[in-house]
Length: 145
Length: 145
Image 1 (cartoon, rainbow over the protein chains, first blue to last red):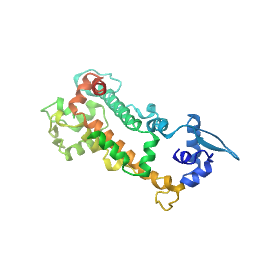
Image 2: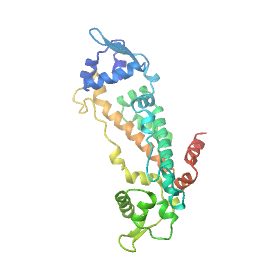
Image 3: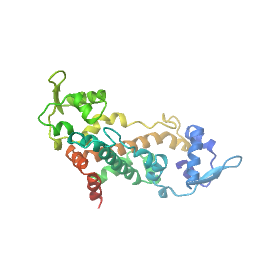
Image 4: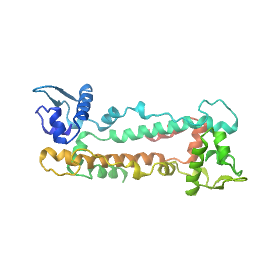
């Protein structure tokens, strides 16, 4: 996305992206396919083809990209342990019957929090850090002061 | 830990933990070994052996347990892509040369934030949620109001 942005309004072929960024061509094509489907880029394959970014960098949220890559439904893995069916009801098995639900809830909340972290930033922030490492850290540390 | 706490001051054998909590005996022994090494429990194996919790639940931080399980040095995986050696210096390869550092920094900060989430809680909170699911969610939502 940063490369497409820097080369506006030129159309960029996936091959050029792979070569210039020294990334695997198949990985690049897969990423482009997802971004195209999600409306971040427009473009076409073949001769005279190429891709263009449809949004400004400050309109592209890093958290949205994270959610695209790792959907919440995947990372909210249920924590299964103990007597997860809750078939026993004595005091001894109280922990066993309820620990799965408690840990699943805790992990789910932690994952929601983790996503919120990424949602603080846009691709403009990423570009900023790329041109001056330490930008992200200063931003986060500033919040905590 | 919750089971050891509930059964104070009785010494609990690893076999009883495995049976009562319906957990794998080898996993239980490995966990006990780590907790013993870290000073959370005292105890001995063999006949008349067993384990006791050395701290109160409110002295056991959930984040510390998370750090024990997944040390920061493991999760701060470096993100290697593009020209991570930075051998080229044209405008085109600026992204390629710097993206690894930027993403590694972002992921590291996200991981630190993730750990902070768990460090908010002690085992007393975990017990609270176990006896009334929804406690964690109310606690976290209350912070965001």
